[in-house]
Image (cartoon, rainbow, N blue to C red; front, side, top):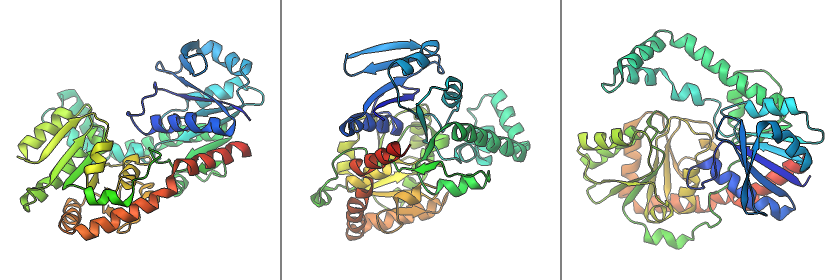
Length: 392
């Protein structure tokens, strides 16, 4: 198996998120094992595909009607879909194409719990009572609250249907964490032997040396998209308010990122009268990781959480709510990071306070993180991909 094609829904930009980074890493490293790797992206719901071919240094555009023949003509031995956590459109196309000799992998980048965790009862309640919510959306949110048990049942069924469609077509469905399997088994009793677990690799080749711990500043870092229902950055600001009230005037919170809720978060920062908070915009996060001592994640759910392993490989102590399955693949609480009971803002602030006061303790955890993140070194994760590919 030598020719591999990868398909996803966005043009590659490694600064834009985890899926971008994973595709980029596969394209960089799989050729070292003798594979030819091509990447298609579609921005119009699988109607047109754009191929960047590194050999000819230009993009080729292929309509959906011509993609099957292109894959045949170019002897695509393996197609890897990266959209399995959101859509089953590609899997349905693969089932229609029936290309002889072509294997198919789909990767599930989200948690199976994504929809119900993001659109929880609390989400609809907040939406219904936010003063900035348009009236017609408030009524919709109140209706969802009223029929929430029925809505949740329907939501779970839609997520399961998407998963099962992908699973039944694929020769292998990749999950990011073994802790997702019990959650899927709560929804279906289907045999899951075609599910394979491959953790996400580190974002960068280099793991910082122990010496970086001597250069850390009194800085706390958040790197995130500003999508508040998912990332819950308003909780991070509320936690930071608790810390400012306890006198940590010499500590700084840097928030790297951008997104649709930027104005809301900046307004909340003003309303809470926070003093040592800086919104940097979208930046290369590496210099901020190198300076920071602590990292905050407040997400309601993640598929993996690359920012946690990015923290580990740069000597930053990651702190996260216990809100999604894969977290336990990344952090061992108290050893290489800290896991806080979900929604317990006081416990989160208390954990941070202890680490901010106790340099020896935060350096102990950061040192363990530098060691434990080696589990996710790029060469080790790519080797797992190669083993799976060769087994098909």
